[in-house]
Length: 465
Image 1: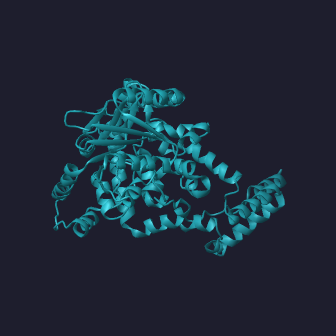
Image 2: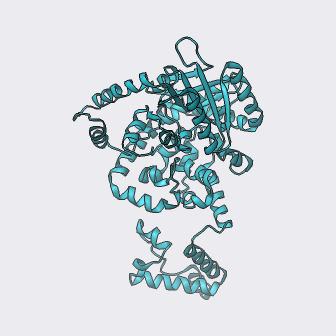
Image 3: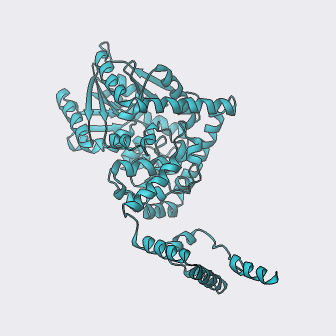
């Protein structure tokens, strides 16, 4: 997927002006946010918070022990019959995949939902090599046939209304006009069933991999993940190296907070644990490709290591007022919302995603809803600091800040500036405020200045003594 994160402002304007996107995203995220509250704190608020902190510790412990757990995560699956491969970057991960495809002569590939494969643009590489690749998650399937990318970590098609989805299915796969959503799903199911049965290779991601047992864990709601990982003779799983957890107890905690936070369910409909190849009707060859692609670099930077604790539940997107307004495509790459504003600059380079750390009101809702208590607001501030230190800020912003610094350092200039601002506001010149304040004012009413400044009131008070 092409990186367009530096175009956030322009892409956000497009999404907001569309009208349908804020409406669809707003409705979807509000529903998910409220369902999360009902599921996470169903027993009591203290119980939900304790569960959240247990999950946070499980991920922090895994990060503290990551080098050792990676060794286990190779040894245990290999013992179970997996073929374990390592990819330093996207190019190496895709080359591993092409080698596997060639080795088994695979032509028809069915994919389950995977953010890592979106991150490395796997589909483009496979299609260019002549393979038939189909996304089998319903939302991902709709976007694939419409040549779009997901806009949400959990609900990829959240930015489209039912009417828009109906139109896509009518135009792209010949669906007759159907009003009932269940009938539309049934039509797509018939189409996808053929793909499942014809596939000679299945590709998936993984929500977690358990170092203690070498188990590959998937949490899904549609059943497509189970079909992709059991019907074809070859199964390839792409796993980010941060997805490792230490043991079954930690997995038991995380697999509860993930669906509660993401979809408001106590458990997902399908919770799969794959322990190795099957020689009785299932996959005979099972590959796990551990993908780094910048994660080691994040791990080495103590300011941002915490971001690798993310379990991709999407709760921070559902809570974020910026994401609710713009949707995910405005962020210009795979990961949107608050966590995307952190990990995108870290994975692709700050110079390629400069606006994203500023795409936040710093309201703190993202940290409040995070099931593993990641301090996203703090990392956004650190990234803003890094952007200034790297001199990646715009000329007008730098000039404005320098001017503000000089004004604030001089009592006389500060007082003169206040008088000028009050005079300008009185005669309506606030409409002519230059950028960057001009952009800020487009969405807000400019506050009224006090009739008298503090300094003026102080001087008057002193005279009366």
